[in-house]
Image (cartoon, rainbow, N blue to C red; front, side):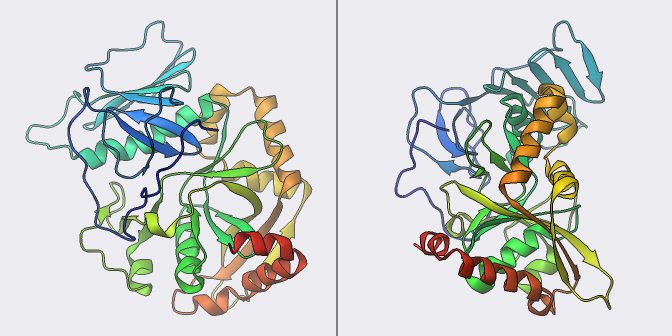
Length: 348
């Protein structure tokens, strides 16, 4: 998807302390790679993977100064304005973000805020790399999926589910216990109109609850807290990620079972698999604003026919995680045995 390549020294130390970035903007240009797209930014974005200088980047992130309301506003949601191929969101006390034509994001940090309220650059970047970049991906008619994913010996397996279902915990646990490379956490992208469902990783970053960090013996000192959930932390874990895109083989919807219920992994097909993929779309309500409904449904239906979809129910217990993952691990091993060529490629 991109014209720019990664330098050999692009990765940072694993689980490093949060880098806050600098306030510099306007004159400096920072180059990154994310979601298979090249970005040039006037803001330093330490969450992203550095890339070589790109003359014609896919995405520009600019800081032009104060942004006013969108002209000829056609529709307004709370804190969101729409006008044609442009969208503008206001995050109270943080900043205003204008997203245009799937090509650029303009950031205005000069918004009203309470006296004495200081805005950290990490807060500005959080919404830039979250909601704003998610909207831009929909404008490009990509298929952003709300998943965490790992490279298993049977190919790339991604995990989805409602908030608190354990997507990030599952990926982090499989990486730590089995050494399987991380692919993405929170959001990854399927390229539009591709011949196969290649998953392009998002920022190499994990977001884990405090109890999961404790269970995996990861120190929270120096980690960035989530703005909306004080007991959730952001980990810069670039060295644990595999940056290159790979075909998505399996999507697993996670559900919490009752404490006395045995874990189960059930294959899904047809309408059930289609519905799981619809639920896995990142900010699907915004995707419908920038994609004709028929196109979006056709893309999701095609993906459902290209990958295997499962529903995995297991009792929630960090102390008995290995026991609860029994059916999942058995299926990964069975898939590996059935496709030795895939396993060999993924182990290189």
